[in-house]
Length: 245
View 1: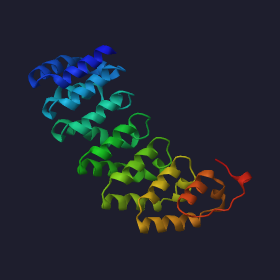
View 2 (view 1 turned 90 degrees about the vertical axis):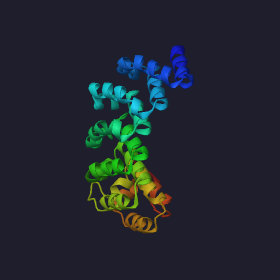
View 3 (view 1 turned 135 degrees about the vertical axis):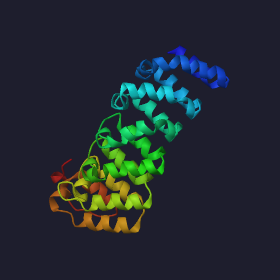
View 4 (view 1 turned 60 degrees about the horizontal axis):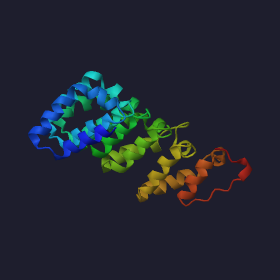
């Protein structure tokens, strides 16, 4: 534990040549490091301080281990997040291609969802667009998923106007049991709907308010739905004893 702090400090203070020698010694232990509660901090520090064109050996070790295994590991996901933030497409291109292709699956996992969120927030416009295209057809279901709903919220906050239009259209046009009204009445989807309203886009807000105001009566019994309605400035009159989570 203390040793990992010493190594992190060395990575900060050493000159480039000595730092590269140190990282070269660490590379064969990449998997052992990311699986360690302390070693993963050493690996992410190396990614943060090393030039992008020096990260190839670490990326090779991760690729050999398998992107799914790394992304689904509670510490491995952090390593992929740092690579997304600090490495260039030249080094990470093939790795990110595989991650994007599996994004519909990865965004449902308790750890790998953070990797997809990082791609949306820190990836290039091209990568962000690829993630949106892969997830678009799944959005109505993902919006109510325990972990994937966080990815959908991240999409709403970091996508461009054209991508946002496609996302909103897909969600608004979904049929029951994954309609916008059903999403608003679900535990996790309710936060996605609030995030839609928080975009402060008048056309989105108006359509959202209209849909919620005319929602099926059985959904009015949901405490999540009534919370969302109140957030959007609507009043929903339901007897408290009839409300369900």
